[in-house]
Every structure is written in C-alpha cells, then in structure tokens.
Image 1 (cartoon, rainbow, N blue to C red):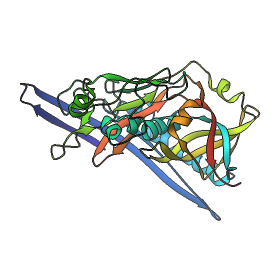
Image 2: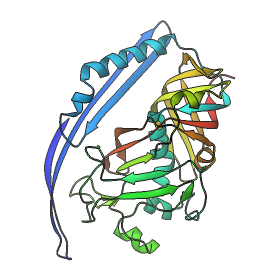
Image 3: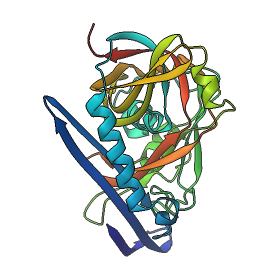
Image 4: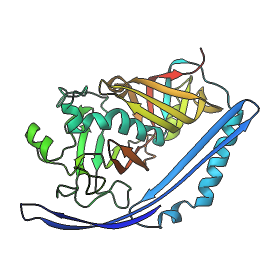
Length: 312
C-alpha cells in the first residue's frame, strides 16, 4: 500500500493547518500444512517516510523469514498449559502494551469504566516499567504532526517507574480530567469524528541483554511473535502467539505451536522482572470504530509468571 494525501484543518480559534500524509505499508501472510498440522505466519512493514523502509528489510528477506517460521511451526510440539515464567519478545510486548494497557489509557475508555479509572498517581506495574505514547517518532507508522483537533503531536508519559501518571486525551476528555490535550484526537477521514487513538505506544527499553533475560528460567517459554490479541475494560486480555520456543535451563529450546497467553493486565505488569535493550517498533492498524495506523513495541522482557494455553 502506498497512500498519500493532504488533510486541511480549520477551527474557530483561527488555526489553519495543511498536513501532508504519506504511508507505505507492506504485508506478507502465508499458510502451510503437513499431514494433520496447519501453520500460518505473517509480518508487516510500515512507515511514514517513504520506500526507504525497504533498505532496512527487503520484501525478499521478509518472505524468507516467513517461510522459515512456517517450517518451524510444522515440526513444533504443543505447549504445556499452566502458569510459567516467560520471556516476551519485542513483537509480543508491543501488542500486549497496545491491546492490554493502551486502550485502558485512552481517556474516553478510561471514563467508560476501564480498570485504571481510579489508578492515576498509583503504582500499577513493577518499577522497571515505563510506558509512552509518542506521536513524534521519525518515520514511525503512527507518527503525526498535529492531531485532528489541531493539537501538536507530543511524547506522552503514561507510566513512569510503575506509576500511572498520564492518559491519552482529546480536547473533550482533557477538559473532563482538567488536563491538557495530548494530541491523540484522530479521525479516519473527514466523515468521522476525531476520537482518542493511540499513535506509537511502547514500553521503554532497559539495560538487560537477551541472554540475561532467559538465564534464570529453568523451564518456561520464549514468546517471540504474536498472532492476534484482544482485551477488555476489566483488565483481562488474551494474546495468540505465532512463534514460540521452550526455555530449558536458561537456553532457548525447541519450537512450540498453538500457544496463547492470557491473564490480568495489571497483575502481568507487576510481574515484569527485567527489561531488555533490544527495542523495536512494529507497525499495525487499530480498529475502534475507525481504522488508524499505529505502531507498538518495546524490548524483550522477562515476566515471572504468565498463563499459557496448551495441553495439561
């Protein structure tokens, strides 16, 4: 997808804006089967800075990665079900932060009854947890110059050292919370009313190498790539995993398939033990009655315990 356009914004405060829009989006999705095993895998690339994105990773390289992932899934074992320690890769961390926490921190949904409504200023996560929503990341798929209410893009701190200190606002919700708008009012196009939407939402990197994350785990799972996710305002979530491996005695072991994780968002945030330095943002499209281009991401993390869906 190569999408360009110009948005014009005028309000009764005298603001007149002309916003250039450029989106490049590339997606590969493939399936494979062998005897009674079915596998699927996919990956997306997305940017607001043009086709330079393919200098970092070519379509051929993406295709080769997907092919290799399918081969591993076809020979993978099914996981044990239960609560286990886990290392979540950057891709899985991103969808967890977006789906399980990010929507709770969209102020219109906070007002609608999300589990963090009465948590502002309180500890909701471990001290190593820092979460941002940033509309200013150069080239990122969720970056904007101004939102669709004429508010400049900014970097918004949502969680600092485990304490929730901010929400994502449009003008309306900012007024209700007696706060300033954060540049999160976005509309799919002129036919839609701007609502509170994420931009580039991520967990900030820490200082651990990947090997340090897996080293203490006697048996657990490395959850590398997500398949899909959903969450509820009560703080429950479920994330499907596309690519995962056993961790045995501090080393990555054999691949596993048909795995999912679920649990309570705040409980899981409090179980984050260590945060890696391998930070990455991943492009996506978010639906909330309208479609918005976004990024989510972070580094790999170690979680003390997460509920694994599988055989018992």
